[in-house]
Picture (tube, each protein chain N blue to C red):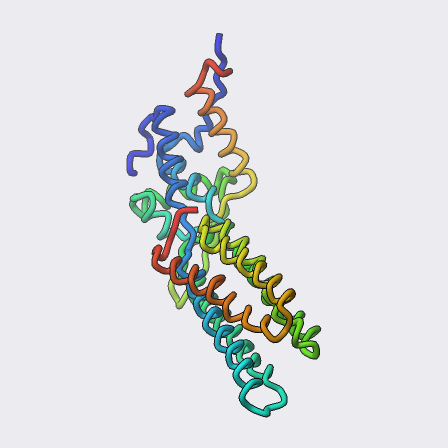
Length: 195
Length: 99
């Protein structure tokens, strides 16, 4: 694109606009990292809590969730270092990031409010997790993530109806359907995609 | 007789239009990325970016990353408005019967 003084026709102008707008892509590589990382971390914590409470006499099995605090720092450091390397930032990426930051705040508030009422935790965390997953699916135009968000909400309802004993299995199942399956599918789609 | 709106001369240039089209879709972009996407030389791109900046269509920020200079560009509200007007005028050119 060198000869800037060349007179363009209307069709040429339109072609340039279309070509260039199609080059604006969203970085989906980061999205898949966070989904897979949190999918495995929460899956581990939820299963560990179930196993500790079932097979040991330890009085505070929910302490395993403390692992999510360093997890937040891992996500922040990864997001910050990779975000700095990006040569452009789209508005969708900003919406994507803010939605997930909002979710992290909501989750920690819920954990604070509900930590003495553990049987309600699963359904509320799943309810909250469904929202950013569902919205991210639409931002990325990635249907498995939309279905993942819906799966969280269905499992939240199932946990409520089934009661705490059976309902606690909804969290690891939710991580599998809501984060890990869409996360690995997203990773296989490539690092970047057109929004 | 069909009346056409004049096409904005700042935007009616291949490279400037390409840069503005790219910036319409992103929040901000680095010079190196714009050069890669438009397949232009650094010198030519630099001149066209200066023209867009002087017209008030984009903001240019110079910063440093790991001791290397970094130029990032962002479309202004004025630039966005003029781009939309340009596209609207272009549509009139391409579909004069709809006027």
